[in-house]
Length: 311
Image (cartoon, rainbow, N blue to C red; front, side, top):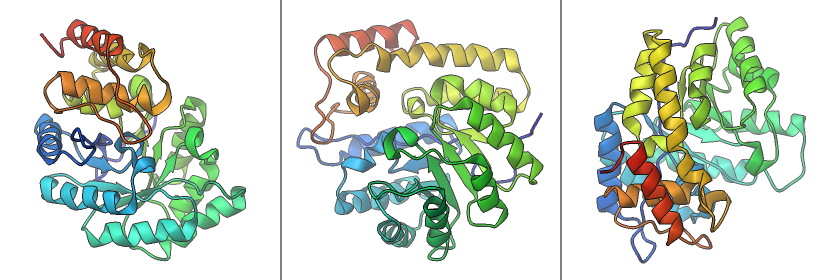
């Protein structure tokens, strides 16, 4: 069985940070600080800003840079900061990378390009081109549901061996491909840090040798994800399963939503849970997504209470 690389700073639990908004849809700095500090106090190993859970696709450049500026200030070196540099095409991503680096982030996370039609050749060149403009650690973000390109495990390992990539954040939902990626990465000498973003199957990824997880649900319950990682490091697989079962049930907050789908049901449920738990002051979403209300809120509260997250 593959073993995780514990020497890298990018390991363990690295939540993709959900961004709280005021009723006027501005960054709620008070709630932002409260949520970030709560996760750090719980023992997370890093934080990922401007990912899907951070609604990066809905932000203007100015809003992205505001989030990064505040994120680096709030974290204040306590854990590594990873920044999403997600955009349609390569040179737009390079611009994002340069700006993110200027704020002092510790690593960059990029998807494949999207909108313009391309193929494997263009995808590989995309990551190689980004590397030419930055010395920061670069993670590939495998997110085919949003960018419509599935990153090939062999290509990723090749880019890792060549020093182009330092890791992969896998949110593909393709556990077979992720298992092959783990195997190929190990055979190549483990050039990549491999992180799963699949909240309800983290236990299986750890058992296969993943280096950590990037679960959006860790915004709601960072404590259980941190304990699960530590149990996995101790090879206490019975405890790992017990914690994963709890987290899988807690993830029902996204499944029981009736009013909407996509970001509204996923990130919307996380925001609603954090709002009801008193971490956020609202559950406002970026336009055009509307916040959950009514029965959806009641169902989320019921799950939070059942899973011991609220009284």
